[in-house]
Length: 71
Image (tube, rainbow, N blue to C red; front, side):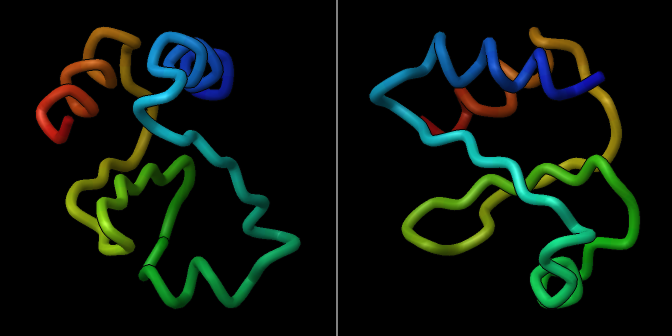
């Protein structure tokens, strides 16, 4: 459900942000490292540090606001 929205965000913000997906089944150490307890979990990194995050589905407009406040 969130995938297509994030793909649109990636296209609309090309050159400004990098959107990456990761399988928690294939990468079990990383979710533990970032205390991910449920999915979808979205983390926004800036200079290698998590600066914001949310869990669960959001509208495209909400995600644009989420991203814009960090640009």
